[in-house]
Image (cartoon, rainbow, N blue to C red; front, side):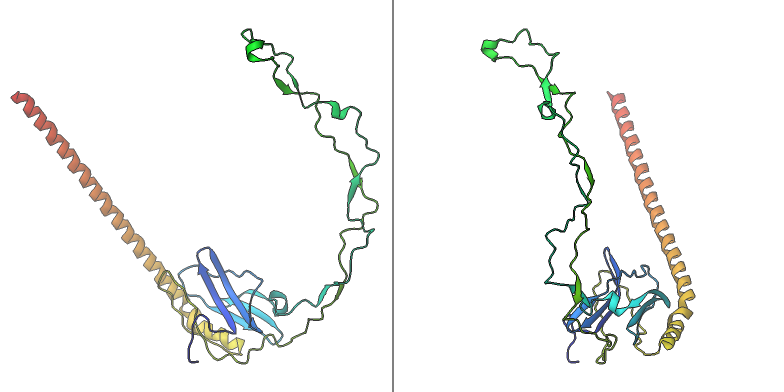
Length: 287
């Protein structure tokens, strides 16, 4: 390969993506020029220890994703990616019959609005209100009592509903074979895979990648992972525990030193205040 960069086409992208709130394991296949993301949400490990990520793609067009030699997701390439268009589609020639009733309930024809319902106002004049003594009709205009909520008002009348005897459900177009569907039993097959590359974007240094393996022997892949990761796991965890303990101790020492410096500043300030008070007393004595 003469050049390699972010725009270089790839066959399969696989691995963890931890970026801000985004935490997922990418499994992306390039199929006929399109990058297809998995429909599943696969969560990666989110700590500072070493982990092993494994993708198994089988001739049966089934797959497995393993983290630390444990299966965390599996299924069918047909189901979990949009490699192929659907086998069946809605018949574009079909249309809903005119008499098709999708209403599950209908107004009750026996339920009638009571007479005088709409004649009841929502607000009425307050019968307990009286015109203020200082009110002058010539200057202030004709006095009108304030309004208040009418206790007889029942709101807008709503007709009761009943089950619709003619209800047929929500209409759906009949399905027909998709003329654009063409089965492909070689989804798993990527014969032109020749290179391995890394797509990295980091804001914090320290990530290390090693022991990249591509093989057609799943058993050997597990053995390889055991030799290069599992056999070293306990030692790494012990080292991480010691490093964390040392960091905590160092942080505690720094906090204690800061507290001591704060205490010294406080003592110094008290001495200054005492000196100032002695000086003031001395001046009083001289006066």
